[in-house]
Image (cartoon, rainbow, N blue to C red; front, side, top):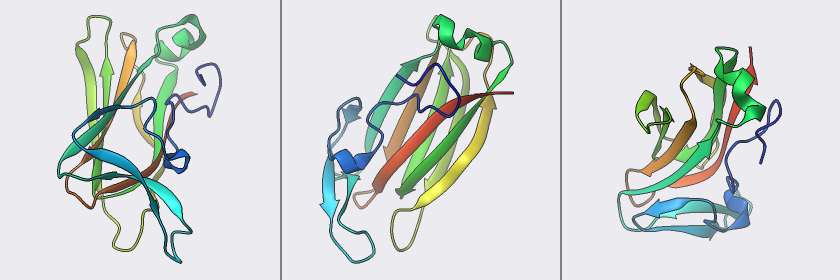
Length: 155
């Protein structure tokens, strides 16, 4: 599950190239589509098909394997690929209350989806953080999303 080491992705099924939405809660109309063009090399992307839509995933970081990260000894990093999407990262405590909230984007590229954030630090890990909620928010029908990598790194 990626929780026990450095540079491990905490999220499940983050590579759209698998052409499946497994691991994500979907709100609205989103599908995995194959895009064929010379520049995109027949890649698969997640795409909103009915206007505004959202993909969401919650990762539990309260187990013993990551406790040392949660005592102000860790930082959260993100890498993401997409067009016309927002990415919201919410740190939650054990009572499901918001500890901190970050919104990145919109990710906009005029030509094709590409890596828009590469190992960008978004937060320190606060002591009370037990879960991290990741949301990909499609603002319009032609929004595309390819890959996302969420990690906790030791300071």
